Every structure is written in structure tokens, then in C-alpha cells.
Image 1: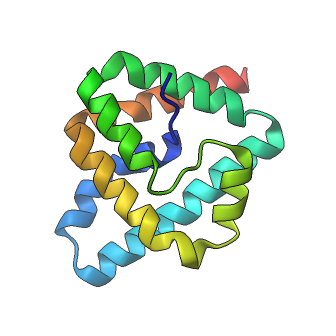
Image 2: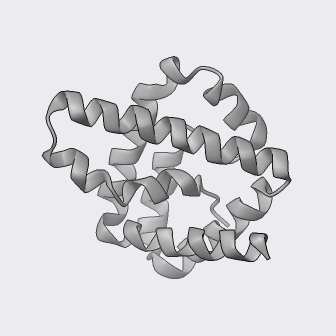
Amino acid sequence: MIKQTFTLILLITTVSLARSASDNEESTFYVDAFKEVCSLRTKEIKDGNFDKAIKATSDCREKLLSKDELAAISKCEIILPMIKADEVTKICNDMNGSLDKFTEQIKCNKQAAGDKINKFGECYVAFQRSVAG
């Protein structure tokens, strides 16, 4: 099974807004998105839900995407791997050094899966509801 960094993909649902923004606004978008990803992933790690979130959203992704799209997404994940807790910790502790790769990965994911990427938001919301009870 191909794992993923779902929160990254969730944030791609708004990447179309960044496309129409000025360079400065686009840069701010990616900084804010990266901070949010790190905040959510760090919370999942602390709450013991990180691995569950990765699995649930990976399963969802496999239902939504073709094999070719999954293969393309897996190549994007190599840019900035955040599918293990230690990877998240390392990357989020060096946000300035990782921002360019984060931006590249979001653009890569959007190109690989197109508008299907937006459906992952629904998967993430469903996972969060199941965790909340």
C-alpha cells in the first residue's frame, strides 16, 4: 500500500487560490499551509493517532485514484517524506529549510491527481470524526 502525507493533500484543495494570487500572496499561502500541516501532524503524533491517520487516508486515496495517479503521487512524496513520525518531527523542526520542498510537493500532487485531490478533504474530515468519537 502506498502511504501518504494526507494533510499535505488536504491543503491542496485550496492550492487553486494560490495560483491566482501574486507571488507574495502565494508564498504566504505555502508558509501558512506548511505551519498548519506541522501543527496537525504534531498533534496527531502526540495524541497517538498519526499512524491511524496515515492508514485511513491512504486507504481512501487508493479508492479514489487510478494506479497511474497513485504512482505519480508516490513520486511526489519522495520530495518531502512525512509518512513517519520521526520524519514529521525532523521536517517541522526545520520549516525554513523545508519550505521549498513542501511547495514543490504540493504542486506535484496537484499535477499528479488534478481535481481528484480535493476529495481527500472529505476523507480527512471523516477520519477526524471517527477519532473524536
